[in-house]
Length: 104
View (tube, rainbow, N blue to C red):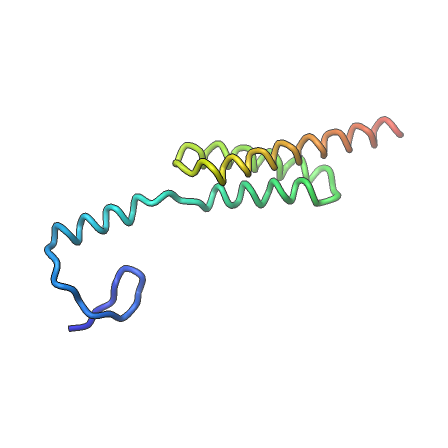
């Protein structure tokens, strides 16, 4: 007998008990969510690259908040990279803004 598995693929159904199937589902659903950490890293890199200081500051602050939330969910490495990039991008944007204001 063929059926769809968790990922939507057509496969042969295995003879497993309901307890084993529930254990698999519970383990599968407890994987850490890396979306927030990925967004944090992306916003941190954008804060360092985009030449518009106001957007850099906003992206950096949002990246810092997302990195802190991602660390709570258990994604340590990617969240730390996002936090570092967001902090550096925010500092660069603030320094650029201050130097622009001092030149005026």
